[in-house]
Length: 387
Length: 78
Image 1 (cartoon, chains in turn yellow, brown):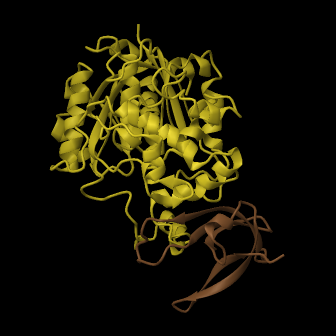
Image 2 (cartoon, each protein chain N blue to C red):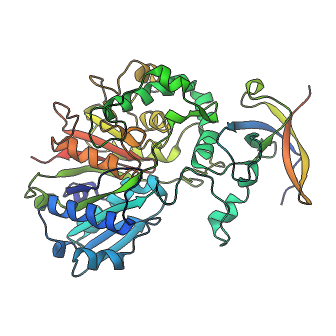
């Protein structure tokens, strides 16, 4: 999108349910709760929401949410594919609607009982409905590849062998994000920091790449966001987070988690293209005060750091193992604990933490968080304090 | 359409330790880069995990499952 128009949009409201392993209520109820909270946080009434964006995989229909919230008239509704990799992209889609004038205030939500109902981490069987995805799956499920951890492990082994990372190196991120989580009351790992030994003693899930503590949570919960104009966001009770830059790119063979045939599995070409687009303007990687990076599995953080230019190539291992992602580090990453340490709300909780940091509302508030990059594979944005 | 030789290299591999749906014992899953260019997802047989490195030379062989042939790959004997 035109960068000047994008800069005129902002996230004005954030809402969330509690994150748990058993919410005890429906996915629709979770969606309504997080959405109401986000709308109130933006200082708006539900009747002022005129756009909806969610994930293609969200089970809550627009036709259920609109009457449940009291939304009067929608001018924009769309859904983003690519699962959690589409989380930042969903916000950019909402911003596109606002920037073009198609809608004035767009609600973005994602809510599910991903632990107490359909568990993403458990083996899946091939769908009886013949979709392009199920036909693709028929080429790999016969070889025991039936969970995201196994798919990701198979891709990341090539990456780790190429850049010289071991599972022990991944442990340094795993420890850093649990340390952030340990002081965030909303996090599953609240009050429970881990050691590098804990990481190395956790059981293999996909050997030699992923141990249990390299894998994200399975969580019940919801997160809502309200995207509107920066001008309007300035009036929100807690202020807003300007979309100072943003980009979405996919590449020919891109597939977020079962992309076994892409040109370059030793990296993520889509994220590389996103980085090039993001830094084409005035902002530079070194201007970032923190980063919220999609971390369904710990290697993804390393890929993002390198492909988005947040860490010089060749210095990645040293950067992470010397503690630069943790407290007092050069680039604090996932200060809420990330998808590993806080909860797995499909990336939306990482975006919420980016907003909280620039609005000075984080449980682990950084002293001067002016620019925060939030990235999920195919898309990234820079959230900037509105002042 | 191009016929392929069944020769290739081990592009990536992983040993799933989490149970598989059918309850079958874990085996090494692999991405094989065929000599002719395309990649195929398959199983790596005849080697232990700690003997493997990426780009190892491999050859196809066929297993029969429920009357159907399924390609798997084995490290090439030098």
